[in-house]
Image 1 (spheres, rainbow, N blue to C red):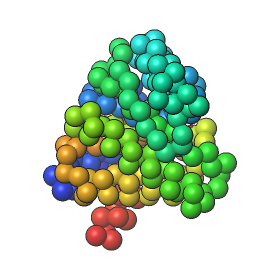
Image 2: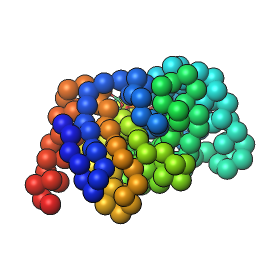
Image 3: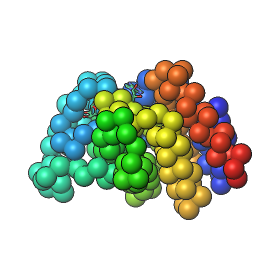
Image 4: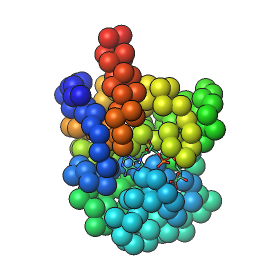
Length: 186
Ligand code: APR
């Protein structure tokens, strides 16, 4: 599914985010920035050690206690097609979705686009943050993700394309429904 809002192309697709050729791809990291499984594991294993090296530098300087939930940082994309990886940490929901979870997940998407703009990046791909190991409910997470991205697009006409790269058709379904709902409300 594709649409254009305030001059920014918004694309939903099924795929492996490590294959994306946007300038930046967003990593669903944890606060240690030392890697993990899921998207994090795929990005580090395909992107190579240069990514982890820059994550270590970030931990030694800007975020010695770890990247707080909802914040975002940028590193090289290493061997990936994407030039950059924007690492963000979503909330751990354990199947619930409180107002705080919603706010933190919103911030993770919004701040990732802020970091993209600060670095002159115009095309960004997102995974479905916090809906895997962090067990945030897909329907509410997809809506929050869409709200954050569309708010940023409306507030700042800078980014030219945002993609949501969803690992399976069932995950895609939730993002498609969320986008349709928001477009119908507009
Ligand atoms: N491309 C796109 N989406 C992917 C990929 C991939 N290569 N691999 C997994 N996904 C999807 C999952 O299916 C899920 O929908 O990304 C979504 C997020 O799942 P996780 O990667 O588990 O991320 P999250 O729920 O945010 O948990 C983060 O898991 O991997 C660890 O280090 C990470 O501790 C952190 C936690």
